[in-house]
View 1 (cartoon, rainbow, N blue to C red):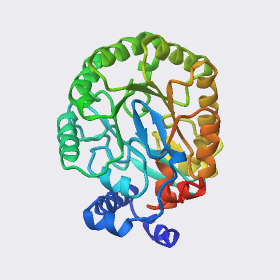
View 2 (tube, rainbow, N blue to C red):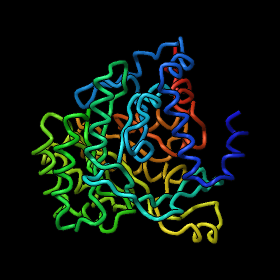
View 3 (cartoon, helix red, strand yellow):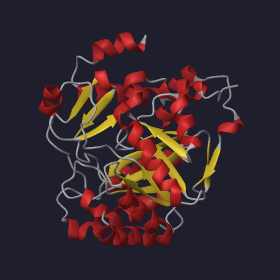
View 4 (tube, rainbow, N blue to C red):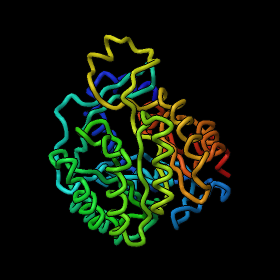
Length: 341
């Protein structure tokens, strides 16, 4: 049924379709929506994951970038996600890059985006999260992904990450320091050890009891990934989110002409699966199991999730598959994992 609907939706502008989808997800989070979506089959306790100081109902969560402004958390929970990572959130509101900035590659089950951290700013997002928590009821584990504003010079990046941390750490179950989006000029350069260390140290100094992770790019060399792992262990972060979108365009079925016409941006979806798995293995070669690794990239099925967990992921996130498999994606994956009983 969803595939027939998607055949119609894919003719529409992807960002417009995203906004329509978010309206549907928000409806799923209302009292009526949750009642209609209620599933009498309980999730197996075997799916629970204890990490970051909390218990996750399942290892499957929604990656950052879908709910940038924390407006649909209950809806995503009702649709089956055990955790939701909101953002990326910057200290000040910003509109992001000019449209068009989101593109579908159906033959590859992939997306290209150059959204540019469009969000309502840290204060507004914190207000929403505080209201959500005070309203009661079941919630997923909530992570907050933080970044710097586009106009903030790289030399002053620490100030932006600290500002976000002060505002958002009190209302987050965990924080993710995003230094790996390809859509903010100069941001990926902050993954260099000399630039990254003061950012992570400053965030840790202001995060209180809130666990802190760092999100890295799949385009880093294996040696650079190992340096990040060393820094994570040295500073005592809670873990790593691996990976963000890629700037690579290799191995795509979509024609090179079409891809070139879409322009710059981060690629997500099926094409990331192989590199995402490779990065996970590199990380786990030296990162002890007590550190949390959230694996992201090319996750579409229950088998994908199981494979990543077997290779050392603590949790797994998805984004693009929600677009291609539909709103019941998370429930389908948990069923494929044998998690319903």
